[in-house]
Image (cartoon, rainbow, N blue to C red; front, side, top):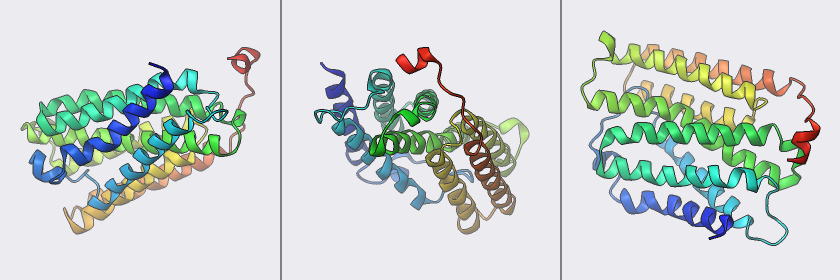
Length: 253
């Protein structure tokens, strides 16, 4: 089956899977209670944008003359990312719950790889192609950067893990700091990609709000806002940095 068809099929399955598997609500069907690192509920609407961009990107590849020139390089990682997203939902719905951890970690690796590959070559893409793939990869990788740490914390709490003697708010603070360090590292490699920074910022603001209205953890609120400032500063700093010119070998690939 052609890669373009595979990409569209897995994108459509990815978009439909939450409606099929979690028709009664995510929290109710998994039985998980949110920990302080879980963003406020409204923030999960970002998945609508991610799924929509995934389907749109895959559909555009089938339009004659509109295929992304980076598709031969990015098509398989994107297809794997979309398939793993559906697998993650299946683990969350049917178990084992720990299976969501390696699934989301692999998703983050793939999304970050695609983002960096796109961001370092985006100057060679024209118009909407640049923003479509950069928006898709950036939102996907940015949200997953925070979601991975939230996922690990949720599964650990559900399994009775003691967090090395730390309280859950203290663990959350450390997880936020670790996630921010990772986000800044990805921003450094992706030339300060703003869609990525926007998704991370969206998650951090929602975590701060959740800890005002839901969990009431002022330390988590404060650290979330400090992390937000760090991410925005990194995005501005790395986007202002001159990029290296591609080598002749890179230009031909």
